[in-house]
Amino acid sequence: MKTVSVIGQAHCDVDLADVAEKAGEIIGNFGYVIVSGGLSGVMEFACKGAKKAGGTTVGILPGYDKDEANKYVDIAVPTGLNHARNVVVVSSGDFIVSIGGGFGTMSEISIASKLGKDIISYHSPIEHQLNFSGEEAFFSHLKETLGHI
Image: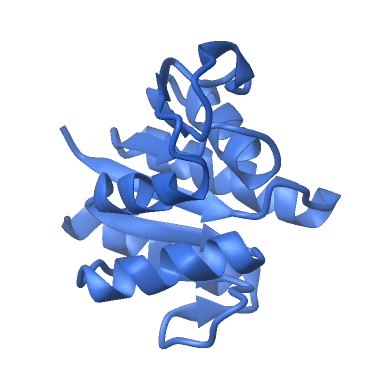
């Protein structure tokens, strides 16, 4: 089973929500399972997009309650790990898609880099090679990567 970990901010504006939803839909169309932190914002909109495409979603939750997952999560994994779950989220993906973000996203990008994971970002809070500021370039590279893994 191929997986993509989608990371990003829990509170996002309409533009980032649209990007996350479209990215989720693209990922779902390629047959990948989305793994995320399972809560709101980028995580929720990416899951929503994946569900539109008939995809499967997994939420690695910070607490012990499955009910805290957003409504687009198929498989909720309550961990009780709070922020430490970030390691589980990024280690679960064959590669990482990062959309916007703050300190939590920065920690996930750092962990993913340490693990040698490929990361494709849209407006990442950390500068790196594949950090796109334009939607068209971001989606094009995402599709290209999904087609080769």
